[in-house]
Amino acid sequence: MTDLQNLQWYALYVRSRYEKKVHRLLLEQKVSSFLPLLDTWKQWSDRKKKVSEPLFRGYLFVNIDIRKEQIAVLDTEGVVKFIGIGKTPSVISQRDIDWLKQLVREPDAIHRHVDYLPAGQRVKVLAGPFRDFEGVVVKQGRESRLVVFFESIMQGVEVTIFPDVLMPIAGH
Image 1 (cartoon, rainbow, N blue to C red):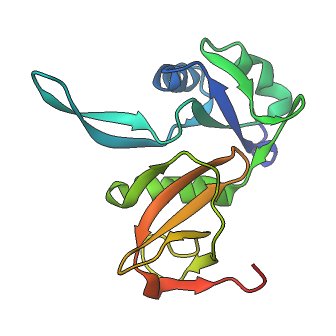
Image 2: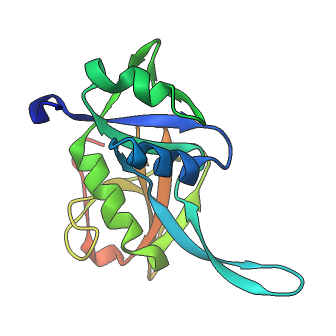
Image 3: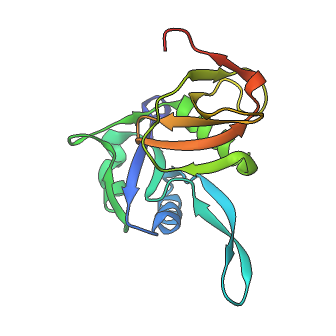
C-alpha cells in the first residue's frame, strides 16, 4: 500500500504515439496516471472523424511514491524515461496538474503552442475558467492569446482570452 503523503506528480516521456497505450497499462497496474487529451477533428479523403489527441505529444503524468514505484513505471511498455535533471525525476506541482485538468475542460480556447516561450508581458488571469493561471501574452487584440508555460516539461499551451481579465504581474 502506498503512503499517500509520499505521492508526487512526475512527467513521463513515452514512445511516439504510445501515450494512450502507456496510460492504459499504468492504470491496469493501479498506477495513478493522467493523460491530458484534446478532442480534434481529423479529415481524411473519405471521411471526417473526431479523435482524442494528447495535449503534449510524448508526455503523460503519474502520481506515485517514486521510491516504491519508479522501477515498475519504467518497466511499463512504451515508457522511455522520467523527465528530470540528470537521473533525478522532477516533481510536477499539483498546481500545474490542476491547470492542465482545467485546460482540457476548455478545448475550444486551446491552440497548440510548440515554440519556445516568446518574450512578452507576464500576466495573471483574474476571472473565468482560467482564473489564477499565469502566462505570457503573445498576441494582443479584442481577444488576447496567452501562453501558459509548464517549465517542468518545457511545454506551453496557447489559449484565447479576453484582455480585460488579465492583470500584469509586477516585476516581469
